[in-house]
Amino acid sequence: MNFKISKKSFLDSLTLVFRAVSSNTPLPSLGGIKIEVEENKITLIASDSNISIKSVIEGNNEEALIINETGEIVIDGKYLMDIVRKIDGNLVSFETIDGLLVKFSGEKSQFKINGMNAAEYPVISFEINDNKPFEIDSKTFMEIIDQTAFACSDKETRPVLTGVNLKVENGVLHANATDSYRLAYKKVKVDSDIGINITVPAKYLNEIYHSIGNNSELKIAIDNQKISFIIGNSVIQTRLLDDVFPDTSRLVPATFSSKLLVSSKEISNAIDRTSFIKSDGKNTVRMNISNEAVEITSSNQIGSSFEKIPVVSYEGNPLEISCSGKYLQDAIRSLSCETVEFDFSGELKPMILKSTDDESLIQLISPVRTYR
Image (cartoon, rainbow, N blue to C red; front, side, top):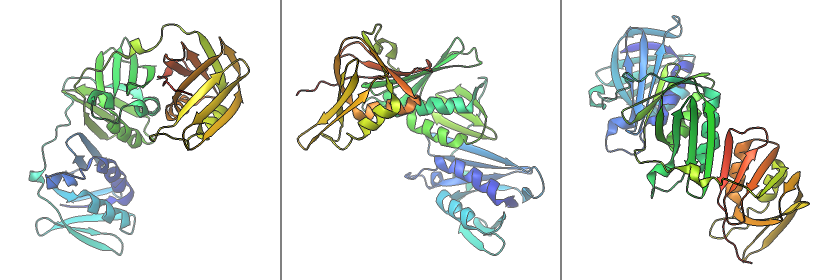
């Protein structure tokens, strides 16, 4: 193998695939990045068996990519990243010498590192078969992840709740995430007539979020218990959770007895100021709501806090309700609005939070029982 490549394009692709390099595996090759060099392109592959990433670099001009000899090899991902990141100059020269020994050269610096036999790397299929990918605006999909994935469970007792459920029917994508105590629901229109109902682990969706970058085009394909995200010349493929996702629609109250409009900034800041008052690591806030104001209190054996903020409007009888301060903060942040709407059905029934400007997203939080 012998090629010369733009340091920037090489490092950009390495940074992407490095997200899938396994940090703890009995199979040494999975700690590496597989480099496949063909006559007109270089393919980088990394996998930890749950998420696999492929990035293809094609030469657009002689300065970007010059391939003198083809071949394939696997190199430890961390060492490869460090070398390419630190090497001087705008071009990186890559050459295998004496079997698996690899020499990297910059303008003044030179590194040598032992690689691994590519035949020892697991065969990873990125084939999409007959399932036609559907397109979605990348910023829209990033919004879906940002506004739902945080509500997933971080406990493995019910694995399916550690993922975001994506359901497409009648040209609408429904995204649901819940940990049983809160729910994030987002819907967007998609240009597709396919019907799917899958659950993707949240931790891998977060990797997708950070990998999309400035790419505007995103294609999604589902096949054989895996989902593939096609971003330009790269493919990110992850496993799916195979349990049945619960029907979250029944968690949303059918009717509401009161509605509160309040400044999202004021209520968020007020809750933030109570965050140091925790019991068992949790901050529970009590909201006493009337036509004039929202009184926010928090207390435990260590201390207490009290704050009063004005309402924009309130419809209904005075209400007192308690819930997790963190859950409130997360929900308000995801709405990204100036005025947040709270819909209540009672002090012990779930509350709904939504933006006054956007009906596509709702956040549900279950209240907690508190004692004075």
